[in-house]
Image (cartoon, rainbow, N blue to C red; front, side):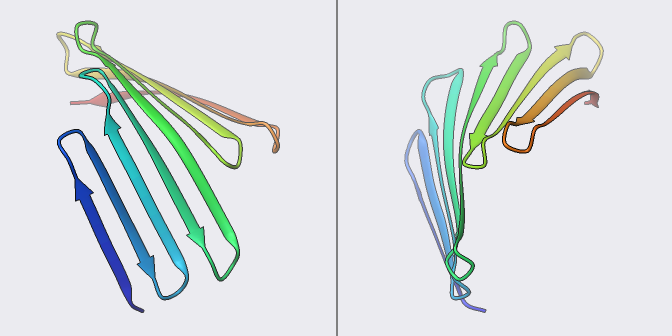
Length: 116
């Protein structure tokens, strides 16, 4: 299998892509909009199988409150979100996550404790 890889990085953005002779293409773009906000987009394609999937996501950081919010939506109508809260002074973070897929009529909700 033969693949070509490329990446271009600026002061506040990154673009990368991979192309394989198997017909697979993967492209990503990441932009840091401000100190607290980042957005990204991703495209995955399999040209031989005729399949593709696109995703758009965000990340919001609120350092004074110890909060991080992350979320994304993709072309399969799957919407995901994660909230992380640092539990200072102990070295733990509380994570709450959710995923909903309207066409498949599925919903998942999770909670976790991150050590470190």
